[in-house]
Length: 505
Image (tube, rainbow, N blue to C red; front, side, top):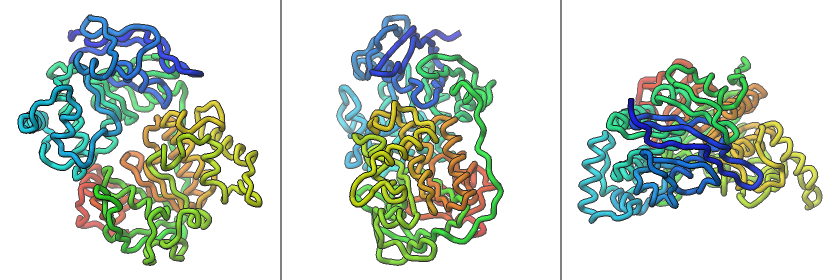
């Protein structure tokens, strides 16, 4: 039997109005891949922040290798052998790989020495990296390698990983899992957070499930179905998304030869993008982050305009129109970045509902805001999409990421779009909420809305899409029927194999 590495005993952390962790206890053993599961707001983030020294518990205790463990900050946690790869990367595009790695070290060696170590460690663990490359030129998968190698150079005994596969192709996921299994075989404990339950089943030895801040149980993922784990997380059963049979209608959105320069030094140029989406159809677009997803959404939303008739809505050119006019005509969008793009952080949910719903929901009258109507619209979104919040006057930044995502998607869905373009609809959302959002998209399509769904979650795209295409370096592959596509074919499409012998649909 392996020894217990980290022991958590009755750890509690409360914030005004909410208990994030309520007397949580569990152990992580050496060489174990341990999953931490829970729906949004269950307390996962708070718990790992306490382990990593970002948050101090109100009560309870932790021990590491049998000794009391209470890191005052991340530096102390790292010194004790705890490393963490965050969901959102903390890298500077204008710096090299080696320079970024050095920034994350307490006492970095000279860059030449560090570069040698990066090559050695990256090759040893099957994550090859060129330490001299500019970070802004790296793919999302390569950026994650930088974060992982930075952690491995610390020779950690506990590695915390938060949603590590959300930006990876299937082939990259396979490589990552091989690396994690090798680390575990060397005695490193891995605390693994993910909403992808089939990945949990394939990788993890044990799982601890949190619900409303409490430890509600453990399981062995390989012996437990994904649905059973999801139901443990939410405390009840929930229905999987169900399709309603219907035939697609006429073309609602048409894009032809859309080419745009990169909007920034590290952005992605769009290169002859072309596709159509019919009423009642869902076209799924997959791809690793950073291959043009944000730029494509901006071109469709009107944040980036073009005088060429490359974007047509119901046959009429709209490429020259801004976001407000496109929304009036029925083309609604939901971007990937929740805070600062989809929602204004310091505005209330009522105010955020007003920002995009003013025209379509009739929230203005003779130049004045109809605040009662705006509040009612926000409340309708909260109720319909089960947004966990004290009320519509709560600031957007006060919501958990998953709950804000539900609000953003719900705000657009309830406006009954004719065309809906959404990027990462279930990013960071738990299994039950993801199922509800996917069902809402399927219901929209059944009612005749044309939907373009951009996502890095391939399971999601295969579940809801009628056709699938992949973005790679600003180019879009021909769309193929989603039914029958294999993981290998999808991975090749995402990797840029656009010249495969396939039928153009």
